[in-house]
Image 1 (spheres, rainbow, N blue to C red):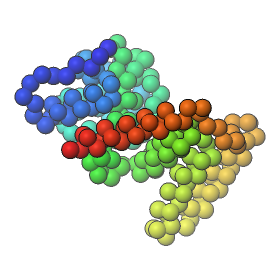
Image 2: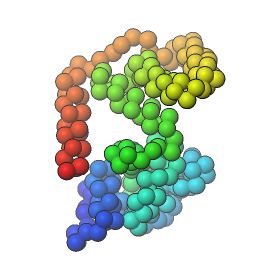
Image 3: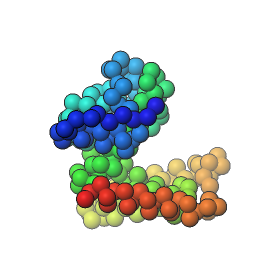
Image 4: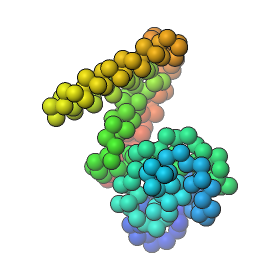
Length: 206
């Protein structure tokens, strides 16, 4: 279903709502708060914000609360919400959009490691056209360890190395870790998409 913009002399709250709807590709105006998504959200109890509540914050113009809540950073993108929604609203795409908007606004992530993993995923995917576990996790671990080193938290670095080493060995034993480097055939198309997205972001900031 195509996203419909509200036509009016838009205050900032409506501009925010329209931007989230357009960038996420989700018709959030169709949400009538049936809460079917809330019943299936695996992190709702932990974040204290369920998909329906997040959409409500957006439609009510609560910009700060929408950009600063744990659901945005702890959503696991399981798409249970969209499967249950009678109007096919995929809140996972909304949380991803809000992550990007929070980053553009200079807002400190509530879960910094989620932001670091998101950045590592995008960097690896942009380089190879797909996410490579070794490259992506290498980028991610370097980011997090440098931050821990800056804080002088050597214990966290040691624990992280041990945890990830154990996980890596377990994945190799079950043949779930791909050692080789695979690149998509038309990597130029992926790079063009990234370039287009960057240009669009710069245009939005003007």
